[in-house]
Image 1: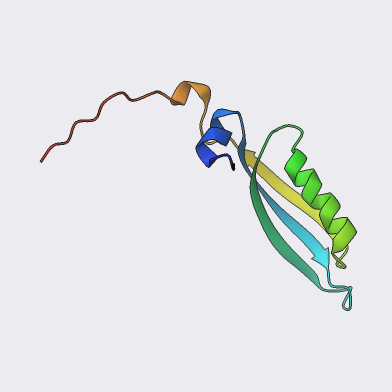
Image 2: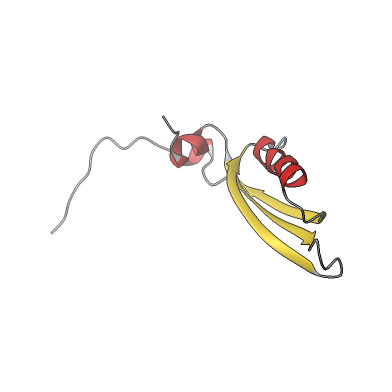
Length: 89
């Protein structure tokens, strides 16, 4: 069973966005970029480093650099349980 995004955020995960700059295998003077996003835990970023390892193992384009940012979308104090709902016509 897959964990929902809300459950991940409540467990401390935040959205990590990384931009990978890499060189084309046949044209080393060309620098391309690839964007990657996933929910990850700061400060260790295990999913990001797992993807970097995958890239180095499986992708032919050598990495030039990686730039990333991390943002917690829900903090513990921002979440509250709602018991009821009122509908106004």
